[in-house]
Image (tube, rainbow, N blue to C red; front, side):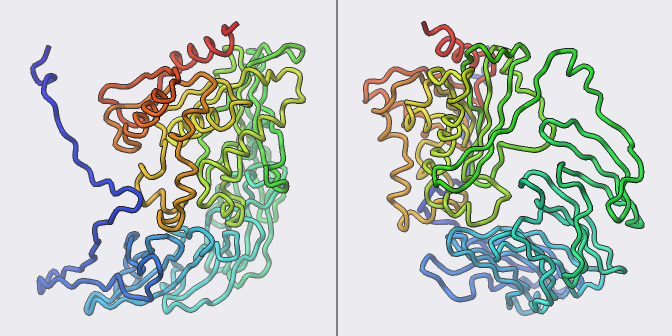
Amino acid sequence: MNQLKLLDSIEIEAYPKVGADNLPVDLMVYDLDSKKVTPFEIREGKPFDDGALGTYVYGMSWTPDGKELLYHSTNRKQDIMELRAADPATGKSRTVVREEWLASFTKNTPEMQVLKDAKRFIWASERSGFNNYYLYDFSGKLINTITNHAFEVARIVKVDEKETMLYYMARSSDNHMKMQLHKVKLDGTKDVRLTNPAFDHSVTLSPDNKFFVDVAQTHDTAPFTNLIDAKGKVVAELVKSDLSKFEELGLKKVEVFTFTSVDGVTQLHGMIHYPSTFDPSKNYPVILSNYGGPATNAFRETFTLPDAITEYGFIVLNIDGRNVGGRGKRLLDQLYGNLGKVEMDDFAAGVKSLYNRAYIDKTRVGVYGTSYGGTTAATLLLRYPDVFQVAVANSAVTDWRNYDNVYTERFMNLLENNLKGYEASSLMPMAKNLQGELLIFFGTADNNVHPANSLQLIDALQKAGKSIEVQLAPDGGHTALNRERMMEFFIKHLVMRD
């Protein structure tokens, strides 16, 4: 054995957890001629109950004329964010744009595009409850609202300043995952959708903006490419996907289904992946594959190949809850402070909504995931033993007090404001509820979700007298069990259990 492999090493990394003090951050400018260092005033402004702005400082850039430094400043709770401009000669800062969303959190770095006149910029904001575009100047004056939709704008495609026209993508179709190209005058007039709302689109505008190449698709429609003019008319069909191999292999297209959230109102989406040998007269074990974190999407409208796991003889599900991104702030507000409850309730509801399908075996349901997905897997097995019988939890956060404060406090509030929420999401008190089969996997050198998370849950399960399986990756980081070993576990407990 190589002698070096016998020696231990220590990795040191700053990792302030929930409630811990952050190291203060200073921002300074260095004058190359005078060699003078001038500190910027980054913690000025009205203090709030959870501390003044300036807790987090990031996103530095210079104004187009080079006279001021732009930066973003956020308070500890992350419900107030400012774009600031600082004078390098004096260090004085001023607020250009201020964003507040006191019900939960603000976006850290909103989309921003400076116009060629170097005096104005387009700014994306969720202040209306939906992401929209606004026109500002660098004095901080709001010139006008550009879009005012009850759906989300997604990204700026192009700005034609000569024609004062903004081209942008938005979630303006029958569902939030079908992106559409719009154009609108910078004064907010003449907003027009240019793409077919039946599909999801990705586009490339011509240099003169008279045409665009459009790649259109849905979850079950393979991509096809057209040339489209500035009025949205198809000029030429360029190419279609060849599905002959897909069909030759007998692969099944993924199905999208909808169900009602536990809140009784919100319509949510899921996806069903079928094996190539699928027979609706037979009974299939089911595996939920989910990440589940805030503002993420399991359902999508890009053409989706069936999950390879299906070829083991399983039906695979992906399900969105009220954690879903792209549907506005107010939906995510329900998740705020309730990680491990709201979204998990919906994932379980999504599975139960399929019970009326004869080929779904509700007595053989597994779940797996990594990182937040590992938390999802373990939580669902412990909270919903009537729905899930087997789980593989990779690199899971088992108590949000174990995780870093920037991410966690953003979605869970400060510990002193939401101790009840933190305690409710901890998996250790739930260990006594374990009825199914659980495999816990983690890397011993995981510097993201520390091994302490898995170890604490293992300890709690042992003290509760529960039998589990544990696999680990020696010196492994933030990782997951290999798929073959994972499927061995699922097959053993969902297929061969009898």
